[in-house]
Image 1: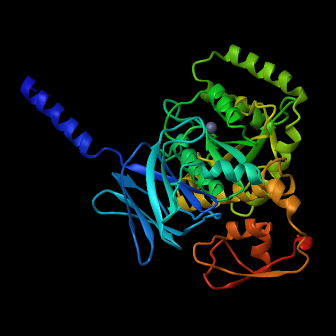
Image 2: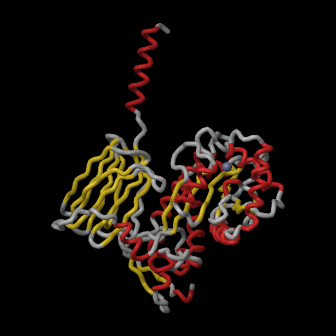
Image 3: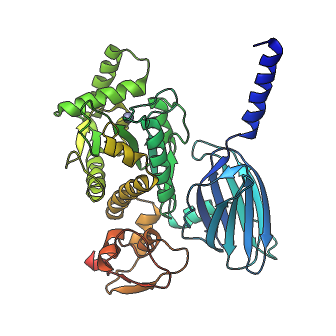
Length: 444
Ligand SMILES: [Zn+2]
């Protein structure tokens, strides 16, 4: 190729690179309300260009992000103030449009917030009543927190990433990709629960070392740390999910030892094996006084109960293994091998949006079942349980637009599966206008 041609080729590459700049992914939404103000935070994959305008009859706020994309619908968190419903659509011009349907006229202003240790890049929309003197100057979230308690923070750790692809399936599906997608979905589901907040140790395809994953989780004061992985084995028939907690007594199960070795190697990257075994030994000693271990096992049991309903489980009990990533003595920590990516069936499941959603919901249900029974002191959940009167009779709830089963369950402090069972519901589809039976709390 001549020098001129080469230069031209470079220029063309550059141009096409710009034209196909990856769209901003809208990954989730959180809403906080205080007094008459509402703050809507959209979680983005990177800072975004956007336009914002309001419309009346019916009242709504429109946000266009360009270039932008959204996968699936945004859930409407409860505690939603003036926002009745959130709609979103990918548009032909490469933008994504988010519409907030309001129940009354509000003025809106927006600003970007850069990623910090706790959240990624966000676009914040503050809504204040029309005619109010003060614009939404304060942080509604903080006011809410002080009044009623804090949210339970769940750190979700998508395994591997960047230069470390993790395991690979028969058709080439990579562990680092599917566990990231599964983790993001889990984070969305958790963020839709007003009592909880998710923190992702990595939100994109980058390498994060082990120490940083743990330190980040500790810095956001996580109540629970869940590391998401997919297993692999030379025998492709082996399949199913496994839930691990860190062992403080060494490992009884040879498979768990092999697995821990493989995950640790991948996670540590360039560290020599001898050094690594030292690290594991040291870790085991440090953890001999691990007070969080029994909580970890209890949470793991709840998660296993849920996962068992949607997929094959390799071990019926929570397993113990010396995973380095779980070294967080003060925080209950779990490692979930979501499936065997080396099994063609499991690989197909991991690559499926629907399956990942079902799996993430199962994990969420297990986590909420645990925390409802054991709410950490000072949390919204703990305070709500303390202040709520015992509900002795069955109630009825008419499903309104925008409500989700998990939001309703949370409002009445009833496990989702109890509502499902008394109403003969399979899955979590609910119909607007239908009457749900809400079981009495003493029956739960
Ligand atoms: Zn892994």
